[in-house]
Length: 465
Image 1: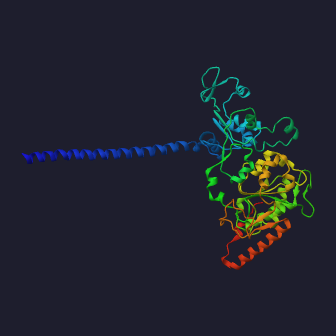
Image 2: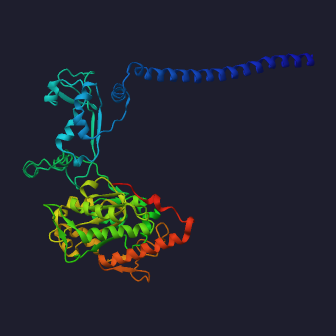
Image 3: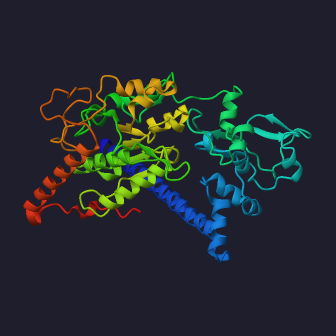
């Protein structure tokens, strides 16, 4: 009887085991079937999305379809929005959110034009956009009926990003700028009217010392942790005794600023000095993409470009810097090292505008070297808080450490180098020219002595106009 009971238990367990395995296989097959079905549905969805391209034959039609029906984020300038507004509206362009960057530099009218790009808005609504609307929830709804019109797109949110402490929109007509306040952006208008704003209170762009130059305009500005931890912010700039400095530039052959034509200011001494410092940096191994040269006047910008074209553009050791432009044109951009020419020697000029000063001082991340007439700018009341820090405890003569090399500096940024035996102090432009000329010959002789194994410096040549 015991043996018969064992056989019956064995025969009962075998079907149970078989059923369990069948159930596991069934689950695996169902999972695989669901996965493959999802893949098939995805393929058909893609085919459905691509179907319009079978009907739209021209590239223009396909681009318009993608922009109006498929794109989730579209980037354009306010000028482009004004030029293409009629076309976009005619094609059914719709959106519910706008993010406007550098809005403090955008005119009121240029701000409003993108808001009217939505299609299917009646002429009455365009003339009186707020007369028949009330705010309910997160969107705008028809106040007369209390029901949302599904055919009318709604602008649900407008995000303006900018800095009213920097330069306003540029108005060429002085009368309109002075008497009609057209240079005031919508962003600045909201700030002036007391609209609540969200301030970004931490910066991670510049060294702490450089940020202090404009921190007085931003009372709550703090530093992100990496500013006090990252090696690039903690180490000194190769070849320079200071990470920022005001270099006092005197007259060259008895001449300071000049004005060949009206409002076309130039300063030959500063232009020569700036280019020589750029050459010195390139000889120490600084990448040209990390250096930008700024000026407060168009005339000086063109003069610096001419000198660079004559001395650096076709030279295998130098090439052109990343940018040579004016302070106004460089707003919203940055670079590791900035060489700034202030140009004027008789009057302060328009750098007296604190907003332009903030832009000029906040473009640099690691090194800022300002070339100007110390006695003029240091005694300007509007500039005192910035220039007092530039000259505090520092010589106004350029101090160099030519034995250092870019990327191989262990010296701390806060370490004083005034007592270093390798320190070279440059008193004027003529001495800097002799110093750079001698250093260039030494580098060229060094490369020649290396023969075929010398690095190919032809790659450094910049074809930039």
